[in-house]
Image 1 (tube, helix red, strand yellow):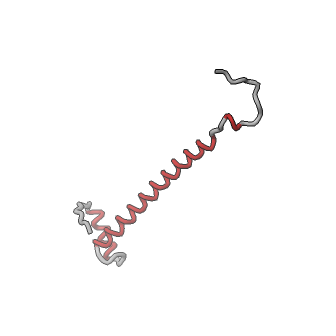
Image 2 (spheres, rainbow, N blue to C red):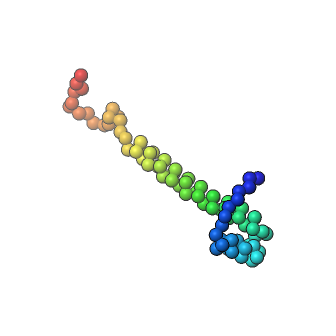
Image 3 (cartoon, rainbow, N blue to C red):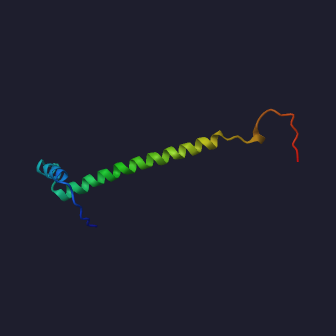
Length: 81
């Protein structure tokens, strides 16, 4: 497991201590690990939503395109060369 050293503001350290003391987590290490995992997971969800939206825009653009050869109804225009 990788180890990372991070300096946290007193406010966050106090919140971590409060969560451990209230029994939400076994210790600060577990609290930090769980909270970071939740944050990373939340970030990934937003990224996937953006990718889906981009895909829908591309699909819609392709579906809106029409092949002139497939259009119904003839026209009186003769092809020119």
